[in-house]
Image (cartoon, rainbow, N blue to C red; front, side, top):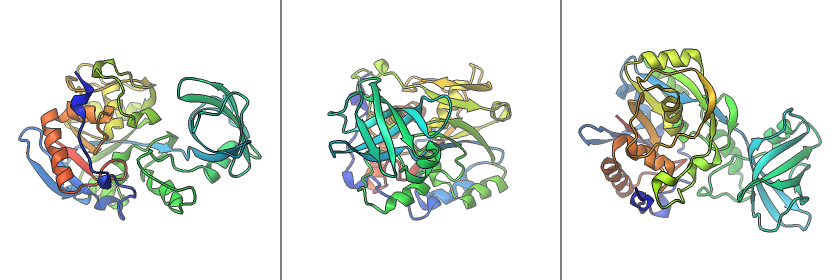
Length: 346
């Protein structure tokens, strides 16, 4: 299977640079897999669409303000994206696996002064893209990060260093039910939920069940392998409680909010669709030909071409239906990607 077959053209102006003024006022494309019918709705209509006793699975991972800006000793500006904390005990000095931008003129021993009085020292190169860095603040580093870190927006959302919208991003690039810190990218399908919509769903008898998957930076990257089957997903930590496992296992129908919740459910399901309690890592790669074991419906944003996320929705709905839906979304000026509109695939 060739990755070039999962490409599509998108006008740059359809890539959403800012969130919808009101979370649940984003557009919702409803797709019926059986009939191929497509309907245009608004996300706040979701309580009218989902059936009573439906189990709605959300990802309650919280995005950490993982983007830091600093200067090298030579004066050059550099950005750090924190990926994984390597320190065993949190403190004023912590060691992290990070991405650096730009990374051409750095090496072990390079010092970086981070805005807000924090020093980063490069320890070693971990891989082609990743570095190990020790960060030392004048007080507890986690408190420093909460005060000075910025939302780790994907590269297609453009911000200037002085952009006042950084404060808005810290709030809006986060679901309203985010609870467990650990993601460096948002589970974006959940960004559309408002308190009002969530309350209406519960009042209508929909069971909202949280699971956790900490989203890594690799989630949104295009696949570089020419052959789909050669692609390897980066591992991401997930957790599902005994109560969540029981409810999902017993449900007549399960709607996953996003590709992350989908991967948790499918990683934890056995061949009969029963969910096991897990606290583990998954590198599950879902692409056309995959047989879904437990997910019956999916809420998801419009994804990057050639990405693992786009392949997942093609696997779930069928490539032909997705091509039709994306063509319609382009023609009717839907907003794309993380801050864009979404679809419900039934």
